[in-house]
Each structure stands twice: as structure tokens, then as C-alpha cells.
Image 1 (cartoon, rainbow, N blue to C red):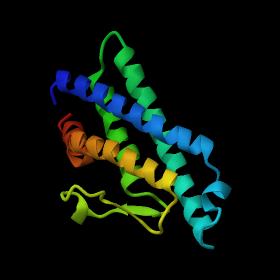
Image 2 (cartoon, one colour):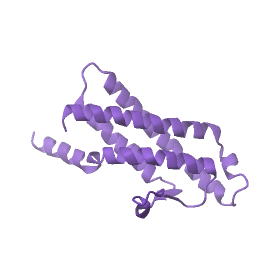
Image 3 (tube, rainbow, N blue to C red):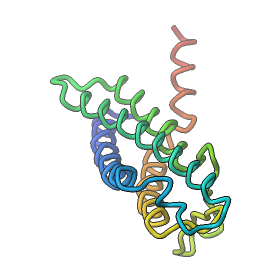
Length: 166
């Protein structure tokens, strides 16, 4: 991939991660398990516990790669190899963490992706603030997934081929 494309992709990915972080962090800072599960179904405590755990992981992955991209972009000489590695991490840690949450409190239903409806389906109906934050960041992670689809498999294949040719 040309260096100018990598730098531009690093810049846009960093901005998108910042937007996601700005949605997730306040939600986690202002909502407790008890608040979310209050007046809900009896099994809602395990649902919200899993949701909060997945969101904390997503926040950490997003913050770490946001910082890595920032450090790379501030360098006087942009390092394409390190940037590609960081973009790979954005895809495999951030994007995959969002779309394949460990606790499976929500999932993406591809049948809705092209209808203009929200493609995210929750295992149980969440309270409005939880639903809103997931749906807002889903758009950001969808864009990141589209932008970084190269890093799903092509990046590793290219790296393997380079290592074998040396």
C-alpha cells in the first residue's frame, strides 16, 4: 500500500477511534451495573455485566491503538511498517472486539445492514443509554471495518510472503 494512503488511513482511523472513545468512556463513567439493571428482568444483571465488560475491553483496545497511531503520526519520519502494524491492531483488536463481543450481549445481523435499519441485535432489550451508545459506536466501527478490510487477511499474507522471500 502506498505510503500516502497509509498515513491518511492512520489519520482517519485515529479520528474515528477518538469519536468512539468519546462515546464509550462517558457511558462507562456514568453508568453502574446496578443502575442499568435496576427495574429490569431478573437475568439482566448478567446481561449488563457482560455488556459493561465488553465495553471496557473495547475502550481499552481503542485507547491503546489511538495512542499508537498518535505517536506514529507525531514522528518526524512516518514509519509505514509500524503504521501498518498499528492499523492491523485497530482491525483485529478494536473492530473485532466490537463485532464479536466475548459476552455476546449483542450481535450484528447482516440481513439489516443494507436496509437502513440498525444491524445490531441485542440478546435482551437494553435500557436506552446502553442501546444508544452501542448503536452510535456501531457506525464508527462499521466505517473502520470498511476502511481497514485490507488488514483482515491481506496484510498478514503480504508479511508472510516478505519473510519467506528473505
